[in-house]
Length: 135
Length: 135
DNA sequence: CCTATTATAGATAATGTGTGTCTATAATAG
DNA sequence: CTATTATAGACACACATTATCTATAATAGG
Image 1 (cartoon, chains in turn purple, red, orange, cyan):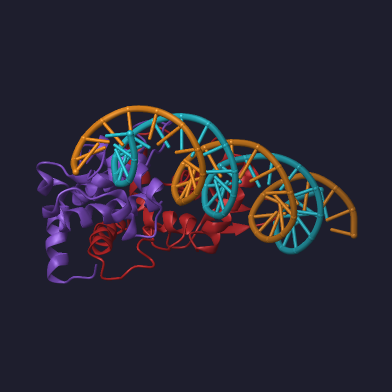
Image 2 (cartoon, rainbow over the protein chains, first blue to last red):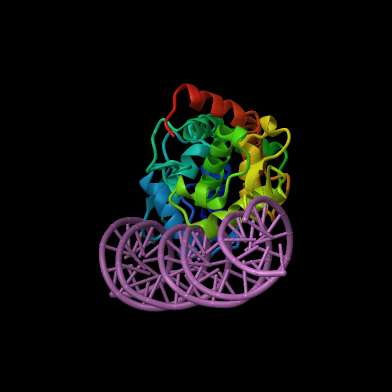
C-alpha cells in the first residue's frame, strides 16, 4: 500500500515542468538529469501523462515535453491516477457483496483521501517551492 | 497502492470474531471456512494480529482465537497496520529533502486518511452488520 | 500419561508487479 | 539528409505477496 517509484518520478517531473514552464519544451534527457532515473524508463512514464492529457509532447529536434493548456488546474490526484491507473486504489472485496460494511467504510475514507489530493494543485505547490526553494 | 489480500482476510476475520464474540474461542479452521483461504496461511496472518495485541490465542484442544480485553476500541487502522506494518504507507522521497513540497502534501492527505480509519471501530461496523446482515 | 486438537514457526515455491534495459521505429527541425 | 527526440515492443530482473508443506509446542480430556 504505497505509491510506486514511477509516480514519484512523475510528480517531480510535473513540478519541474511547472517551475520552468516559460521555457518551452524540455527533453526527457534533461528531465531525467534532475532525478536518478534512465531516460527510456522516464519516457514511458511521461507517455502515460501525455495520454492522460496532462502534458504535451513534440517529437523531433528541439522537441520535448511541456504542460497542457490549462496546466494551472492539474492536481496531485491527476498525476497519481495517470500513472497508477484509475481503478480502485483499494480493489477490495471484488468478489464479495458490494454492501460489505468493511468495503463501504474503507471506500468512504478512500474517497475523502482522493478528494483531498484532488484539491492540491501542482501550480500551487510550485509557487510554494519558489518561495522556499529546495530543487 | 492497494491493500493486500492478507489485510482483507484479517479484516473479515476480525469482523467475524466480533460478531461471534460471546462464543469463546474460535479455531483457525472455522475462521478459514468463512473465507476462501487455507488454514496455514490464515494462521500466519492471525499471528500478526496476536503480536499486535488485537486478539488472543490459546493453543491446544478447545483452543483458538478470541478478541482482546477492550475489543470495542479496535479500529480498521489497527488491523491494517498490524498486517501491513506501520512504516509510511507512502515511503516516499526517502532519499530526498524532507521539506519536499510534494512529500509534505501527500503526507498531509495520508495523515487525514489514517486518522479517519482510526475512528472506524470494528465493533461499530459489526453492529451495523447485525442490523443489515450479509455474512 | 496418552491422544487428539490447536497454534506457531521454518523452509520452500509459485506468482505477479514494479523496475529497468535494449532495440527499433516514427516524426520534426535545421 | 542528418541529428534529435518521442514512442513502442520485447525482454530481463528483483522483490513482495501468496501459498503450501512439514515440524514443533502447548493444552484439554479421557
